[in-house]
Image (cartoon, rainbow, N blue to C red; front, side):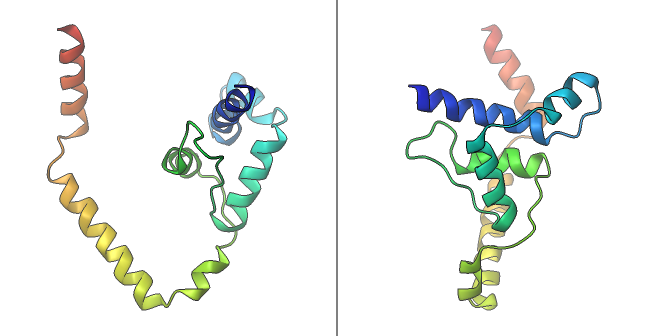
Length: 124
């Protein structure tokens, strides 16, 4: 349990550490020392965009990616494994992902509509 709480803490601290808010509360949190495990995770991401996570950690790679990219965590390099993949294959795969996302979007309601539906369902 302790390990899981530590990983949850790190996920939450990442929000405070990486944010760009200017209010004193947020600036104080951003300036506070961060846990070693989070520092290692951020260094790995910064070096090549990799996200390390423990097995069965509560927050998966997608959650970490959302936080790190949403807070503009810096990435200064790339993963060397990318060099092994020909650019044409990478481009084809990215185009495929783009098609899947675009198709998915046609089946989803606009954000405001989804929130209104959630609010309505909670009141039932």
